[in-house]
Amino acid sequence: METATHTAERLTLARLPSGVPVETTLHRYEGARDGPTLYVQAAQHGREVNGTATLRRFHERLDLDALAGTVLAVPIADPLTFDRVSYTTPEPIDSVNPNLNRAWPGDADGTLHERMAATLWEHAGSADAIVDLHTGSPEMLTHVVFREDDPDSRRLAEAFGTDLLLAEQAGEDADEEWSDRGFDGKLRVVASGEGIPAITPELAYNKQIVDDAVEAGVTGLFNVLRELDMLECEPEPNGDPILARNHLGRVTATGSGLFRPDPDLELGDRITAGTPLGTLYDPTTYEVLQEPVADRDGVLYALTREATVTGGAKLANVALVLD
Image (cartoon, rainbow, N blue to C red):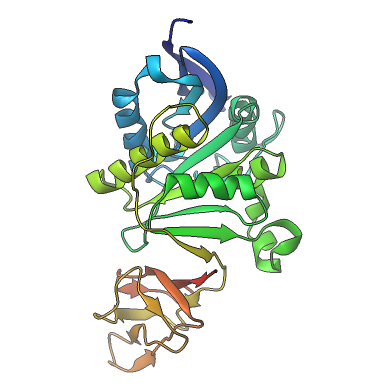
């Protein structure tokens, strides 16, 4: 039996114009037995901190002597957005690819985010499976997204758990909006296209560490290790999953004003097309501008609670329930 080890190394992802390196930390957990390699990362988007907190708690609880194979973990994939508590970089840093999760698999000679993605892909691209931890807003139900045409990714999603599993159509199966929004550059999509099963758990809440969200992440990660035969123990319950299809068609605001969501609606509700979602009104004249309704039957997994909205802003998302 080999000796199980943990190491942590600093990775230079790219360099700023001043020559200052953009660095992060890669944790490597080598088990006592041979097995697959799982790559896990968090905080592609800087305000999504519960994935980072998940990896800290995972580090504290992992029994290396019981591990078969290797876990590679990057708690902060994008230090630039992390330091700004933001979703994207400032325009001068990368005006072409401000969102790291549209730049995979990267380009060693490309823009700053493409170079960062290329460095991380050297590790992720050689793994047997990938978990890309994200954190939704407080207005979004915890869920796991996987590529619909990839049964191995679906298997990982089912193992991870949560109350909602979202199958995403990709590539030729997706509609025009999917391509227009650059989703073909997501880590999950690129990895799956390269034959590496990959999932994106969206843990609840951003900008704050919430124990329930972190525990869902830790339980999910350990369940993925069990599914990959990297741990020999039974999976833990992690929600009561509903399988649904992610869709890009969102209910949006037709104008700007104040939005009051329907107080009787809760995330996770099964609703039907035409269900009232709330009221959008002009705060100065009190005129009702819109009484939005659900555009289809399904599961309500996002509902805007922040009152001030601008025209075109998302008010709600409804996932299409699959058999």
